[in-house]
Amino acid sequence: MERVYIGLGSNLADPAEQLRGAIKSLGQLPQTHLWEVSSFYVSDSLLPGQPRYTNAVAGVDTGLEPLALLDALQAIETGQGRERHERWGPRTLDLDILTFGDRLIDEPRLKVPHYHMQARAFVLYPLGEVAPGLMLADGRTLDQLLAECAFQGLERLPG
Image 1 (cartoon, one colour):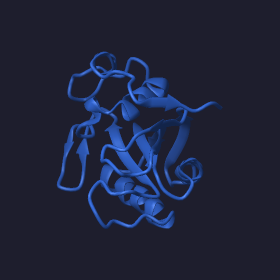
Image 2 (cartoon, one colour; image 1 turned 90 degrees about the horizontal axis):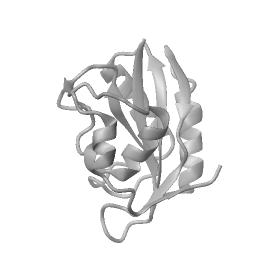
Image 3 (cartoon, helix red, strand yellow; image 1 turned 60 degrees about the vertical axis):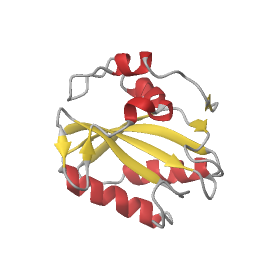
Image 4 (cartoon, one colour; image 1 turned 135 degrees about the vertical axis):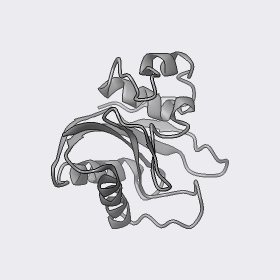
């Protein structure tokens, strides 16, 4: 079993409900135990003109290999209505593998640690809730990344 952190995001079709559905599906994955979910956070889209995003991070322990987990996550996305028309376009659900144990992964379909997460407060702050003191496989610490990424444009939702 390896500890994996998964970023969740949605900005269509009741985003908070989309995240709740994804969390339920994560808890049903084979060889996988969902053990923690962060608070939900709302932020503006990185691209102008899109609805605001709701984001969270889930911690799981899994016996699945990275690409098998990626396939399972993409099946959850598709099951919740995700359509891939444009890169970084609006979406019902986005599930990203942020870290996968102590592995560095550089495959055409999967880069871990997740690229650009160091610049995304909507990833780092929820990750900090579920993984305080995390050391990334590339040697960076979550504390370092948080110190360099302001809690700007984020709203933590109650409950």
